[in-house]
Length: 264
Image (cartoon, rainbow, N blue to C red; front, top):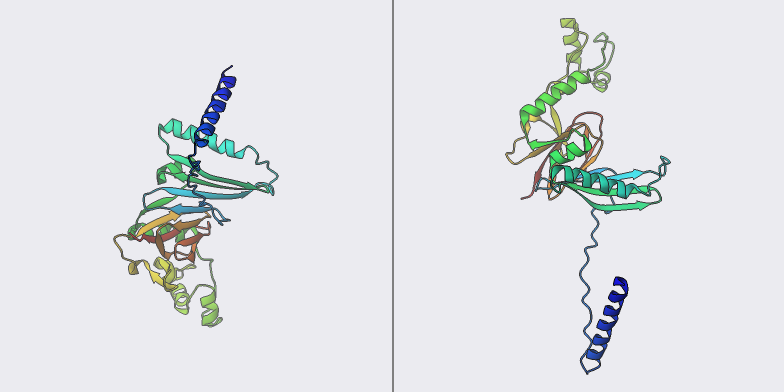
């Protein structure tokens, strides 16, 4: 009965509108609301994190479920349920599914997180963002050197050329010092000091060459691309490469350090 009543009401309103337009007044054209068709995902094809000045993080995931033999029909609803459950548990809307695309088994999602803690909590990740900190860079560098020691090299200093030693990561001075001290391993100058690639000049600089009160620093072991919204990538360590002025490609092979700034 309620549906029939609603139908009659709509018909009645339609007749009234017809009567009004029949009295010589021009028919008013309906106003079509503006629709924002800008895609957050755009042409991105790799897992990417977009960092914003307000502290929010947008994660764009690109997964080919067809290659893995996984059906993706109910994935959007599953993601929505997971986000809703998280938000209800926290008592606030901390995560939002901004965009969902599925084509031929390739699923792309854009999920926005209100802050870094929410992103790490939801994904169980190790992403860290802070103001640039030289001491923290040096600590991470020491850990990396300890975790990735150079191979032991036994060689007489006259047996190889300087070019061959350089290719192996050792200088002739390194080998001489190794023989003098009896040590089987020695750190080169580049190991002793944390170095970065300067994004603006593609040259190598040391941690002592970087100074800036407004510089930000991202560290993670994730294999992901990072886009600095409204900013520029300034320096990258050996576990990251520059794609363009605001995008870095992190290898996931060690702790990547990306120093960047926002253009306030």
